Image 1: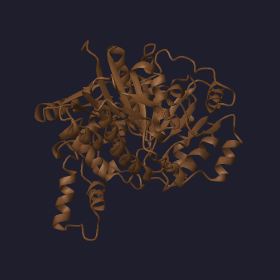
Image 2 (image 1 turned 90 degrees about the horizontal axis):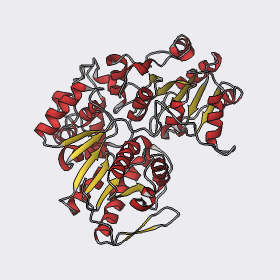
Image 3 (image 1 turned 90 degrees about the vertical axis):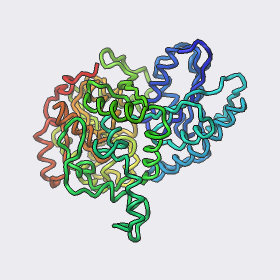
Image 4 (image 1 turned 45 degrees about the vertical axis):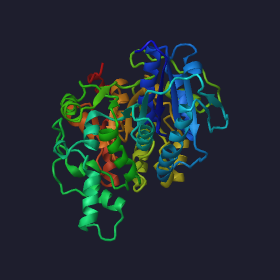
Length: 481
């Protein structure tokens, strides 16, 4: 990089699986260039997570205090919910570009968290690059309108195959024409009578004729498998469409936390379409991990009343490779069929399979566990526990962790591979079915639960599955190093 002072901008979204890859890239750039300053914008409700993640990134001394500015925007504090995603999207779209204008004027920007810290940009160089999360795309568009010369990088947290699915042309199995097809359906009236734009878009996206889904890796994946659960989709159609425009129109390039060895045919297809045809660059930065898979350090000493203390005390009491971590990520949860989750947990209790169930998902509030199940878990502290949030990488790196039941987001997918635990996929939508198909069909490194069994059959399947038997790091044979 240049020996001259540089200033880059990053705009995050309020999902740790989205922020972690971006912040990993930010940390790497800061380590490689001592002349670089980063201004990182986050919704005020997410500033703490950003600071915590940066604190785990092993940056050089004084880098965080002298060359990183984490600025919270918006005064709103929406309660965690699916609807809150749209509210946060519009907050970022409004407030980040306004703060950017102040930076260009060498002014003072105030963080909207309770600290109210002020950042003076009088002696900071003009920004030359901005990294925007896929869920804050209008931030990138507005900054480009203000500064057409600035380089815009689209941060996409899933895999290359998912990037092609979201943004690519139809011949690659992509939804890049989704907005145009929705507008055409609205104008023609075909199947659009009385429906809103979002409803028509959603129907085009989720109603499937039962055809094979084209994909560069050649995985046998039917279109209906892209939405395998009977769960409403998050209300984010405008966000996804704006994300497509950012990736294939406004951006100069994209970053993804994958590597070509994991999906070589998809990488080749991306090169042909995105670089050769659209003349945009892409950067495969690999999984961004704060905890080393080969030599994990013990968790730091924590106060007795810290919520993580209970988690690691539980893990330390269990046999090697015996514990199942159950986590559905930031957004998704099977709230339309909570009995499926309860059957799973009851069966694990019955078989005395150690597990940690985390209820951090936004969707959990719509269908929390029954008092019966919560009481049963509380009555079995030797083999079961509920956590509001877990430090996932530290937990997966623990020697007693053997498997993870996951929705299949990119962060969890790469982490189960890197930490050598068995993956059990319960996908809902977006990138998740693609990841489940890759690991189960292409790499034979995981399992997938499907929603075609009655609860009694699900219980029997769990009893006879890898969940209730000594767990081996089967996925460790798939190496990303």
